[in-house]
Length: 308
Image (cartoon, rainbow, N blue to C red; front, top):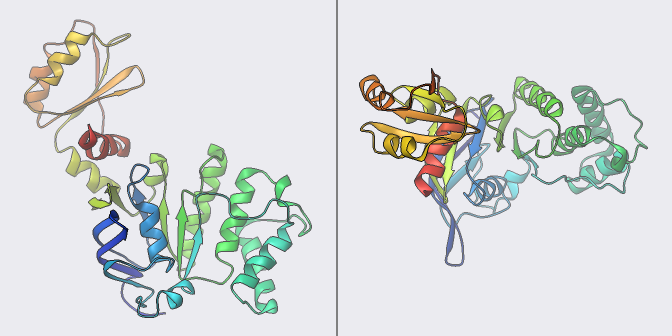
């Protein structure tokens, strides 16, 4: 294993004809890190990951993955990484054993080595069902864990997980993130995309993308403090918010963000004085509670707010 970051991207740009999917992205990921990608659909997350997996060659810029570059077209990089796509990648009409044998064949793994790795990974994910089990009969969470095992069969240094918990239960999502932490405990580096903000909170750092560009990169706490340097308050109007109250808040000096959260509203201000002045004009009986910002608030402000 080489020293230095697990991967580096400098001015990484990927174009498809006249369309720029990834536009001048620069970042690095340390070994053993859980690194998250956040962004709306079409932001460029999956294209970035596919490039760093060696599946696409950069149009411009540089990338090094596991110490290797694209001088061979990305072939060497493919041996350094494992990739689990956002859609289930195992075959429902095959058994568990057949799926993993197929994955091992694609990687040209020695059969004895593949069997040993299979048992190691079964121990990791606590899978104890027969190899003859049809994948179609397994619960969604178990299928995702097996998909992770297939992605790691060749013992990669870096594991890319593209929305790995989409469509599974909250309990299965929590279990999968326990596995992610175990994987990094084994010395692996994990890059993960997710639309679940509670999952993103568990990343060491997060890259936030919008329309192909990297617009923020920091720890979850750092992103929150940068996006919301002043106080935030949750407002409860006891029903639908009066249009006049929202209009007044929208014009308040020092207002950074005003967004609905269910039947309540989050309002962020540049400072305490601005907040108190704005809240003084609200209808009597309006509930108000100081709250810390969440990653969902950050996402709304930096991504959806910019698009608005």
